[in-house]
Image (cartoon, rainbow, N blue to C red; front, side, top):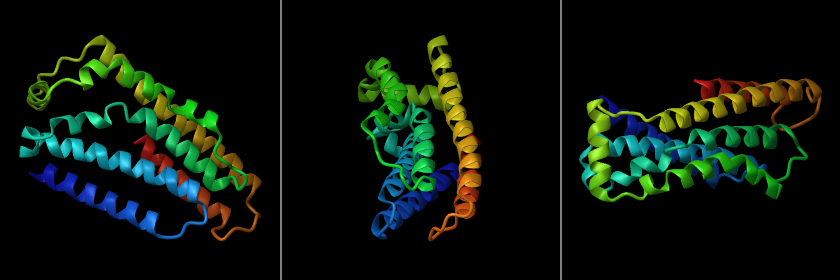
Length: 193
């Protein structure tokens, strides 16, 4: 019961933050878009765990699978958010899509599993919740790669934040650069945890 409450609160808070960011007129729409995408991904992840712990499992068990592989998205989103926040000349380039290729590869490899029917998802959730899920070597490698990918992006981003904040410490912005860097470092710690 406690987890259901935690997931509902996290979903509501995430949706609230998304709506606040989307409604206010941001000077940096690109940074707003990246943080909204990261928050939406977190909402979907929490929604999946809410579904498998409630009677919603009988109706929409596939929602749980939507966030599978999400660490492959969170790292690049954090990196691009940091770049768009600290670099005033940052602009979206089409090749930035390459940051998301590992996620796309994983989704393609797991498509047969992700496209299974309702009954398979309910059975899978039951095995998972009972603690009887046997993890294949392929799945273990995929999980390890997701974690390493997220940690690598987090490390590179935090290093870039440190170097960027020292180069632009005296630049005049509405939000001072040291404050931006502190916020991003805190966010980086959260991603690493």
